[in-house]
Structure formats: C-alpha cells, structure tokens
Length: 166
Image (cartoon, rainbow, N blue to C red; front, top):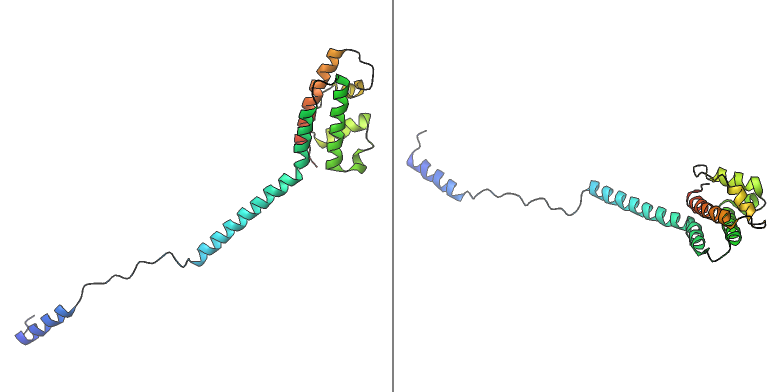
C-alpha cells in the first residue's frame, strides 16, 4: 500500500495519539454474589441448628450424668446389702425420670426385671440379677457371693443408665 507523504504523516500522528491498552480493574470480592450469600446463610443456619441440637441433647441427658455421679458416690464402705439397695433405688429413680412414675413406680420382682430388659435390650442382664436384688432384703448367705453380685449389678446399672432408650 503506497501512501503519499501527507497521508503517511496523518497516519503517524494518529498512531502517536493512541495510548496503550488499559485493562479493566480486576473484579473485586465485594459485594458478594447471591450464591455466596446463600451458602453463608445455609452454613450459619446449619451451625445454629447443630448448636441447638447439642444443647437440647445435653439438657435431655442431664439426668444420666447426675445418675452416673450418684453411682460413683455409692461406695464400698457400705455393706453389700446396702449397696444393692442403693443401686436398685438409683435404677428406679432413673427409670422414673425417663419413663414416668405411672409406668415404673409399681414395678417389682420379675416385672421390674422385664422392664429393665425391654428398655435396654442391647445390654445383657446378668443371669443372677434377680437373685442379687432379692439378696439385699434377706439375711446374708455369703458376703463374697454378695460382693460378686454387687460388682455385676454396679456394671449393669452403669451400662443401663448410659444405654437405655425410650
């Protein structure tokens, strides 16, 4: 392309008036896109729900923590018969708290054992549980036999308090 000098001069002036390319400003992170707001609000709602669930569960299971504390307070300085009576009373108290007085208070002997089994079927009952509970109200046959029964009963009570369900 042949240009006359005048056209060439005009073209050179036009080229000199051009400035370098200006890139647009980078896209900022603020204000957030709608999707981010939805994500943050959803995460916040899930976090609040999780906290509420944890607090509610902690309140609902406070009686279990109190019962386990009372279980630790039943000590070996008592006679085996007294320990058995205290452990059975603790079981009854927890059952009344969890299931209501009308369905638990009148239970005794085999009905009481059946209730304990129904409310925590995944926890195996010691075979001698009924005999151990009745031994607390009889004259002591063998102190060693009662000691073994107390240890079995203490373990069962602890597992039942932790694991019974509604």
